[in-house]
Every structure is written in C-alpha cells, then in structure tokens.
Length: 429
Image (spheres, rainbow, N blue to C red):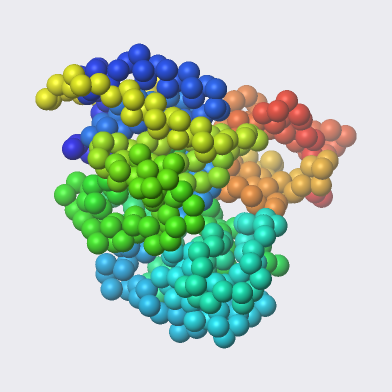
C-alpha cells in the first residue's frame, strides 16, 4: 500500500484498480441526491474517486473526538497517559462540583463514554441526559459531551502539552496535511454549562483521508510508528454496544450481528460527526472513505443514506484489477486560493467591532498581513477575508461576502450570506 507525500496519486483508470467507472458515476448521482459536499475514496493509499469540494475545510463535528483519541494514543505510548487514573486523582472538577461517586470515573471510562458523569457540557445543546447519580462509573454507556470535553482538560494536565499544538506537531505535520492551518481549530467554551471546552476543527476531505490512512496502516506513516499499534487496536474495538454500532475509544465500530454486520465483517471502524461527516476505514477492502456535507448551510442528512453509499462503493468493485495499476499525480479541479494579503495602510481603517442589525457582534482583525473576521458568540474560528474588489472581500470558508462602505460618516459593513440575505452592521464608535 502506498502513502501520499504532499502530492496525492490517483489511478489513471479505475478499472485497472478493480472498480467500474460506470458504477462510480452512479455513486456521483446518488451523492447529488443525498446532499454530499465532498466524497473521497482512497484504495490502497491512492485516490480511486473524488467528488465535490474535497479541498474545502468543513466543520468536522464529532470527528473531533477521534482526533483527540489519536493524541491520547500517542502520549499513552510515551507513558504520559494513565487510563486508570480517576478524575479525582487528576484534580478534575466542574461547576457545580462533581459528586464523590462521579469523581471515581477513570480516563478509560471517559474515552468509552461510560463515566456516569451526567453534568451539563459545552456544545451539546439541550439534550436529555440520565439524572446525575443514576449510574456509577463504568455502569452504562451514554454518548456524553462532558466525557469528551473533560478529556481535553485531562490531556493537557497529564501531558503538559496543549491539545491543538500537539495536533499540529504530532499529526498534521508528519501526515503532511496540505490544507491544515492554525485557524482551523478552536476551543468553544460555555462556562454557564461547564469549565471544560469543546475542541472544534475544520478540515478538508483530503486531510481527513490522511488521518484515516494512518489508522488503516496501524499507526505507521512513511515507515514511522506515529500511534502505537496496540492503541489502534484498543481504540477501534467495541467496548460497548449501544446500537448497531459499538463504541471504542471515541471511534464507532459496527457489530457483526445486526444491520451493519456486512461492514463489520470487513473490519470497519469510523469517526463520525452529525450531519453526514464521516471517515470510514474498511481494512478488508483497503479502503478509506471520507464523506462531508456543507456545514455552512443547513442540511438534513440521514445516516441510512451513508450506509447505502458504502454499499454502492463496495458494489463498484469488479474482478479485473491488474497487478500493478498505473497511477499518476492527482490534479484538483479547484483553483488555488487567491493571495489573501492586504496592505496595512488599507486594512487598518477597517479593523474594529461592528454590530449587525440582528445584534450579533463582528470583529475585524489584522494579523500578519491578513484580515480576519470573528463573530461573537464564536461558533466558528477566525475566518480569512479574501480580497475580491476594492472594499469587498470573500469569507473564505463560508462562501459569504462582506463589503465596507462609509455611510453618513460612519463605517458600515454589508454581509452577504449564501442564502441571499444581506445583514448590515455599523462599526462601534
């Protein structure tokens, strides 16, 4: 199996890799029906099929949890993570405080969503949880953002490393993620709910595919063991059976019995996020599938459609693969990003706080020659403003546009949303 460097390879002919071009075209038509924004199918480390905005960074949603699980594996391998330590021993608490029983939850309980700590958490909305104290640590599986968010705090305390800097250094850099940048990850706090933040990511399908390939290869990348093989096995083994899919260390693993058994027999495991975000690894087929929906638009996505999509991908396999199929460098249809740099003399007057007509605060900042937009509350990180015309910029990630103009002596902005709506705002004096 090959691995990409900075440049991906793709098959010159899908048939030479053992896949029908006609059936792959059927997959594209199905993706149109279900609202897919990006689909990337990697076979033996080579791009078999690509569709949509595979280089665009979309929100990862709960795929974030598998990223943190990978970091835990790296530092567990270095002897800096102890899965048996309790949150009490680690000095982890919250407001209001945890009970004595809740404080006995271990790191492993949190990784497997079995802590029994049903405290409110950041980035979970008003979901229903079991009553606090209703189950002891380890007694029941419950998909619980408190567990996942507290692991962020625990990682930093146990290792002495910041989560995001560790991700940059220990995963993004060695995997040569092409589109990754420091503004694509951020901590989301809701202190009225919990002291522990959600850790959010945006990432392209192409960079997610590298992460999936790392797990398909047992944690090895370009001859180096990035994540211990034992951790890969433990984290992608089901420790609970909540439904058709079991749960490992923040990875989903289907059961051999049940509706997803056909995938379980192929050794499948996946990182999964709400709204159709998926990194699926199928070891028996040497496949990594990345599926993303546009998180900047409101879309309904039903996971049953994703299982249908996987069936179509597996059905596209034919028997005529050649021993050494020809591969060529992959060339994206997307144009490279425009130069985002803005002269400081032009940018400085635009910097400041603006209030939109709906009451939302918008901050324009200037750093290292680039203008950024931040919204309060910050549900997404700083977004680069791409210059497209005098006083007009494109919001790089969300496909909106912003225009600056002077009205009655004050500097105003007009934010044109993808929906067609325009929001007007005025800079604070």
